[in-house]
Length: 55
Length: 226
Length: 68
Image (tube, rainbow over all chains, first blue to last red; front, side, top):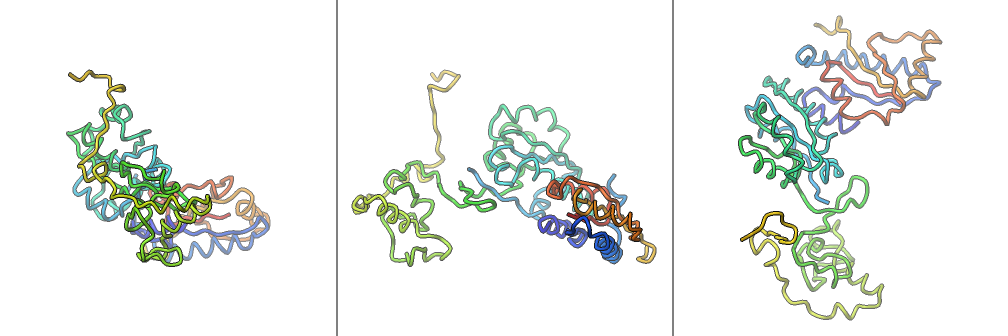
């Protein structure tokens, strides 16, 4: 994960676009939280600058 | 094994210059097992190059190929047909592979994507330590299996030197003193007296000092020499 | 696109036994979470290769969440 995040930084996409979360199968609330959190973070970062450029 | 390390994305893009179509060529042997230039690394680097070049505004079309061994004609010859469509080849093989590509396919430039660093031992997952310098005149038989050429910072044939302190090298305390290791091992076998014999200067003529080396085995050759 | 209307596309690679099951449970419990997520079930997050994460970005996703 750290490796890919570093690569994304080098590429210029931003390593924050990737995240690893850990949870158990009973952690439904935490799952929803993680998704919400991630969505907010990505919304902050804006769209992937590559979107639509590469087929 | 031969160990290498990938160059930075910046340096690679600099080497690629104005190339529009690039073939990233991996090697399935040494650089695969040291995670520098095998099929996986070819995939990762190619993807990274496509994205970075796009973001930089000079998109490069990147294709991928990995051959079993880039340092043997028979494995690289099948690439011949494909090469015409590329501006440049970026090889993730060791320096031998890169040169083999340039020699075999003189009409296209093959650039290096990794730095070939050493002949190393993977002492644990993710750690490679230099063990051999290919000096051409192996001394392991008189040094209890520990190489003072590769592992002693000063390549001493009689040691340790005065810079050996508490078993580590004065050059860097993270380097164990090779001669300490040699003496310890001699002691283990009760043969320390064997190290008292002073070794004469080593014959570096069999190393790089004699110029590029070459081995010719007439018994193996398929073409007769007159 | 400004940040208020931007609806991110996030790839979630979920371990069959942990996060995927958690997502399943979240559904069963009627917990609301954003629609930005696209879940792909994997046998184990250890199966995910670095190159696959990069390919996701090449294909245009805005973020990747690996959940195990």
